[in-house]
Image (cartoon, rainbow, N blue to C red; front, side, top):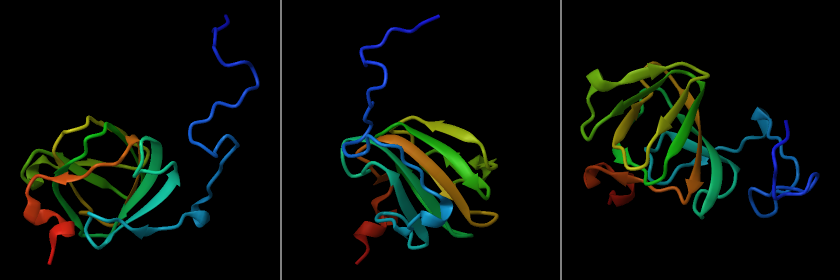
Length: 151
């Protein structure tokens, strides 16, 4: 069986400008940075693309043990893969521990854009990988929870 394609065989299929070549990132090569808009204990590593611009991106997000992420929304649909630790996520506009679900490494989660949700690194550090089409958006349900508005 053959599948027709508009792309000639052997031609690169660029997913990001300047990344028409093979790309591999080993764990020891990942650079963690503060994640603007997230709690101070959160870190982000951009793997592919630029989450601040239109287009596909892949990032890893690390939260330290005990860190809570208040209810918020992202306008973009997102695919989360749990890389390490246990990822606790709940859905709704109010942080409710009873609504948290625990997901082990290897779990894939689809979160539709606009759905209010919250996270907690309840049992220790966790790392998730997020794949989406940017730009990345972040809107807190309650503006007082947004670290970007702190004086």
